Length: 123
Image: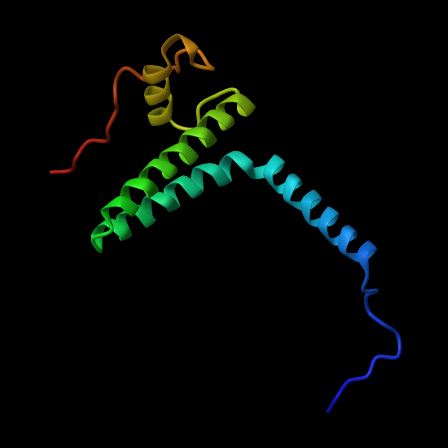
């Protein structure tokens, strides 16, 4: 059975196309502003998984490329996160970036515990 709509749902034309493109760009900009650092860090982890999958199948050059892209995405997202929030997202990234960046680190030295306290093992 064919459906017949007497009133058109959308007007095809250049103005409709412009409105669609502008709307898409506005939504993409809002998403990047809102969760950009997290998306960059998560996509870095995802690229590392893709690198592992490529390397396990013999695509070593693809593996190398995805490792580099993943490191750039994760590192960029981590620096973006630290600049926006004022603290490092994890103790590992704090130690890594403070050691690599040295005096150019965005934040001061992180207050990391000097002693690691572990629960007692039951015998």
